[in-house]
Image (cartoon, rainbow, N blue to C red; front, top):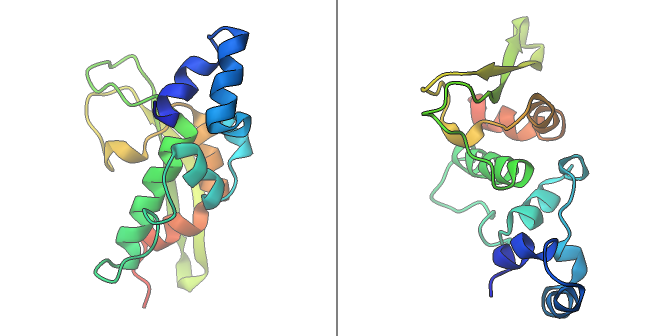
Length: 153
């Protein structure tokens, strides 16, 4: 059994089977964490079930490509099993806006916005289930957004 499957059944299973799963995977790996607990890329990697090999910057990719991969890890960790349903125009799909400040003064989080539409503005992998999750990603992973969105010279 994979850890993802064990996580899905852990809360609903009989107490005796919880012990079996805890022995196999460790209780800390099975308990669903609140998304607000995820504040570092290391925590996001663990929650999303990736290895450190997956998140290592590879020689053939640029920093923005690596940052996009890391933001996908963050989105998966914060969203859990949720994915945008583009056929459901009633479902809110949240994404972050950033702005570049004038005269090279920096990069600033602007707002979390939602779409109730059947199209995407920035790629469905960086949408969030709720405004709080989008804002959380912007707050704790702003450095990844900077690397992804801006050309650094």
